[in-house]
Image 1 (cartoon, helix red, strand yellow):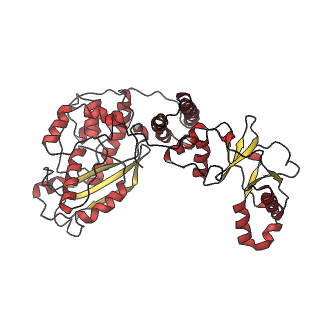
Image 2 (tube, rainbow, N blue to C red):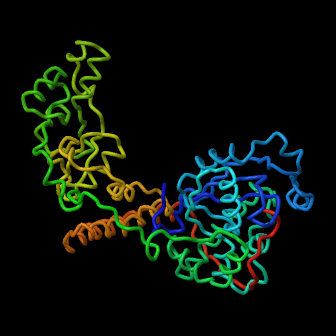
Image 3 (cartoon, rainbow, N blue to C red):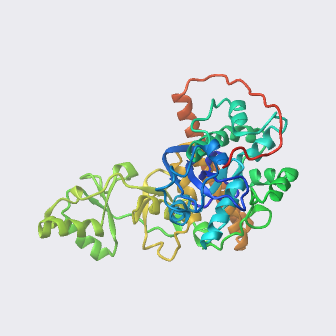
Length: 456
């Protein structure tokens, strides 16, 4: 998934890339080892890496083999770059690319694509070496080993193998995130902006023929707001629901329930326990049966299904949404749960109506609509951060559509409240699971010029 500029670094989805090469000149070097690991929601996933040796068209110089240990025999049976590239592209998708001295890797990959006549698309990227310079400009050096030692990561495993360096670089990046946050650098755009401030280092890389380490889409790092269907953001569920909800007893036969649906022209019924069909129902006390449930039952059991008690066919508990919620939250919840009906809960906590996909048929289920439900289902800080990152985009889109400020503010205020509530729930869980302790502050020191160590 493509990351927006406001995505917090703590919740970033990205790949961390490294390649070993035949030399240090990106205009002449060829790839011999290409690897990447994923960061998902700001967490390292080492279980599903990408790694492939690559057979270059010419012999590997002994000076390069001395660094990464890859000689001609090691790559004799490996595929050439044009066969490796499609698999790597599928792995990377359109995610942010992170690397140590990433400008070198990108330059070599672009060179390989140009030689093979393959399309090249410059990814959005971050360089851990440059980010370390932002955080600790006075370190004695900024080599990968020096950064790992400074950050307390221990010695790298598999140094100068593409996969080993990619995994270690990912750990360096994750260790840099809290230090960047201490300097007010929290989001992807802020990290890009901070990196662009290292003019001398970037100029050195440019002279060496590297690809720019960071490039930001749109003016000042802001994506142009997409046009959205604003109806879901301006209207509440109460305005589109069907009320009151139709309730039947659990012992009613499926055939009788189908007749009621047909006569009342509804596509679902709430199912209550016998004798409670006229009492107020909370979502947890109600089931739901839909036209599709009845069709599936008939398909499976024939006409005998119509004699079954409707309670046996009902789904429980009833999924619901607040009557005061904006319509986009109902769409989001339906999309996530893959359901076509939701109960609607009033201020008293009881079901006061129903909303169906048919009611919302004219509304687009676009990415921005998933915002509310993404907040409500976030299980950790990273997931909550990714949900938060959509807020600026939604706000910009609403402004672009000339939604009155008071209505746009109502949407954003509603989601800020949801974010705060969810953050409190996550914090409460963490406090319950992790013993409280005091964390000592870490001190940063030293500096050195940006160089590419090794042959790739």
